[in-house]
Amino acid sequence: MTNSLKHGFDYLTDHYAAICLFLSLLILTFVGVGDMAVTGALGLILCIAGLTQRCRKVDLYVLIPLILYNLISMASSFLVYRNAVDGYASTQIIFPVIYLLMACADKTELSLARSLCSLWAGITAVSGIIQYVYAAVILNRGGRLNGFLGNPNASGIFFVIGWLLLQDIDAGHHDTHPSGCPGARQRTARPADCHPVKNNAQRAPQTSPVLLKENLLTASAAFTEPFLLISLALTLSMGSFLSMAAGILVLLYRKAKRTTVREALSCACGLLAKAGLGIGTGILLYLTASWTDFPRVCLILFLYIIAMALCWKKFKLFLEEYPGLAACISAAGILVAAAAVIIRPSALATFSERLDMMRSGIGYLTVNPFFGVGPYRWRLLDLQDGGTYFNTWHIHNSLIHVGVELGLMAAAMLVLVILRFLKKEKSPSQGAAFMAFFFHNMMDTSFFYMGITALFLLAAGDPEDCGKKIPDAVTRSLFGAFALYFVYVLFYGIVS
Image (cartoon, rainbow, N blue to C red; front, top):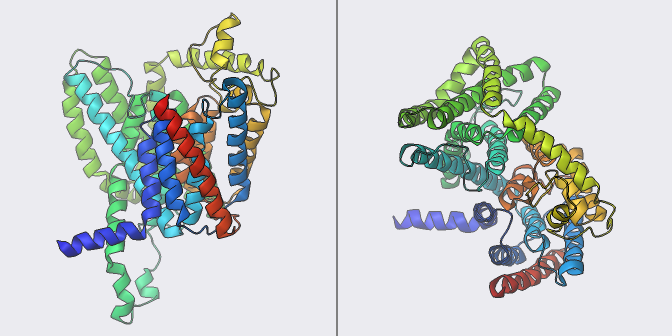
């Protein structure tokens, strides 16, 4: 037991940058759009951890615009509230800190952090299903799943990014087809046949405690895939479904560029078959809880979901062995999509309302193009101006909302970050996660949810790609400056 504890402690200390990144996501998941005291304390801890690190390489075309965006946000807050805290900067400034700390981690630590984050997304999904079944059976209450994030639309895109992230993790730790398709089996010669192990010294790293822990973590993360899909279905978030579709298209496009169109189509059938089964099961659970007089049947479906998760690996092997059936199952996904639209017909009216909201926001872009009307001011102005009152704090288009409340310069900084992410040659799943996040923010407000943006950075961010080495003194100075601001935020959050 003592040796096990020692190995566990050594593992944590050797990878504490990854552990810090994961814990930041775990905490931010619960704070919604932000809490000054929590963000201040968390940011201070991350800065202290960063002071002991060395920056490997960081993409300055992402880091600098993120910092400038928050400086402009502080200026906007100061002009309205006469302080640099009552606004978005006091919470969103943690994003460049997370990105800089990612630049201090090596590839092994980033891979570990992504596996942990994917596992956390799965745990969030499992917890959401349990809460949903409890509410239906005990409280006789159905409806859409809110989850830890407290909002169905926010939970939906959180599950989508977690599921897309899982595709890379699954592909990186299992035998893969040359296409990189997750879960596909390698049909070429085994590595052991090509490069035979000549002695035990070469074999030892394969059974190291660290490797065993990472393999166990990956297997646990893969086990949660059906729960992510079922929870996504329970949110009935049409924006998240469309974002998922956009992400899948990018994922398949990148795979087609790396291999062949035929292999990408084969992978598409496997992905859509899995998505159809998971989302279809979630919709069936929703109908049982919300549309019938026998919500206790949810218990039977819950047992079925557990059995499905236990057999999920066999289901993936089945799809690989019988690609024709995989194509048939994926075609059934059209029925699943139709069922989702029928269940929630109000989605079309909601989309029309969001277009009206965007038109309202565009009218405020010229009021103060440099620093905007001020954080949290659009809702008040919209209420006073008459016409349609949307009863929401954020315009359901994140770029328009930033341009209205923080000014066009702040929106331009985010556009620079978006263009930089588009330029990067990311893995298929990273590109898919970026597209899903970007697409969702064009019709919703996921950028302002701390946990969602943190998960996106950890899933799709790769600071070393196109990055430059910056001096250790500059790295420490940045972390030190961030730490001072977080002390200010923490103090203000406690006393206010």
